Length: 425
Ligand code: SF4
Ligand code: SF4
View (cartoon, protein in one colour):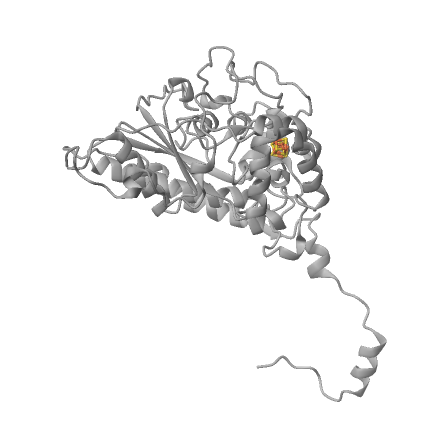
């Protein structure tokens, strides 16, 4: 393969097998988040769930953090059983020689992104890996070393129909996240193994559901922004222009020669300033509704809206209405499925921000962001002391356990019936 070799339109980058029209999103030279100072490397123990696990907020929160794995049976199946498979296979031996493939970073990037889409990723982006986006130490206080040059960021979405049905903090909430964690973890581990087989080092970074089982060595949000997959939102998550926050992500870090994507600007900064819907609906009041950002978001260096991640973490762990919480994702106007009429609004947000208040009002008026119990397909269940029960506050109590008084019509019919009713065999 030499410079004169002809490649397909996909490998050349003139076509993509992505499900979303990524080429339509405006690319910019700089991320839309202002960075005002040096960004510190932080320890993995400084994340909310690790702090809860170590008892930083007392024994009740620590107990609920431990119980969270068992609390809902579907979450347990996803994180306790399936999720645990991925950690041991996220890294491995590198094949001793390079495979005979092109070394052009542009061709290799299009190949790797197409591989992501082949493996059913919803979006894939590439950036250089800054060392400040690598945790300094793991929860056991051992230094984390990850000096690969590039990060490949892989997004898997939550299903829109289930998000639409859910309140955002009911019993399916955690499972929606875990669906995406496991799908993106599978893609990351497969991709990392493939790259190692080509002769380049590569490591998958993924959610294991247990702070003591190695998963992420890198911090996701800045990598999503740097890789052109999102902008930083009011609650501090990265929002994708076609999925909102309705996704989870895994990462592959590698030395395979790649061409980084440029960051994106789809108008989110002006839109978040106007919208504030997540702040109004957050059950723990963790999201600021201020008009102005502050300088220190918690890692130092980012300019962003204030966010109380301690309150958020505590609510997610102590939630009595379900498992964890994603209300801010559920109510966000950006989480819509693909449709041409949503694309018109997306285009307007980008080109005419003065219309943002109109779109926010229209979205609310049309009822987006509300729960749709008529679409509910899961059972609310909670494990308590080794037994499954219908949680006390679940609407399933009313649905399954209502015993009404027989109607007069039934009593008359019953009196006329000489035989006992029988189940159909
Ligand atoms: S996850 Fe729930 S508690 Fe946390 S910020 Fe979002 S809405 Fe608020
Ligand atoms: S709900 Fe509104 S303010 Fe919150 S992240 Fe989404 S667009 Fe931004």
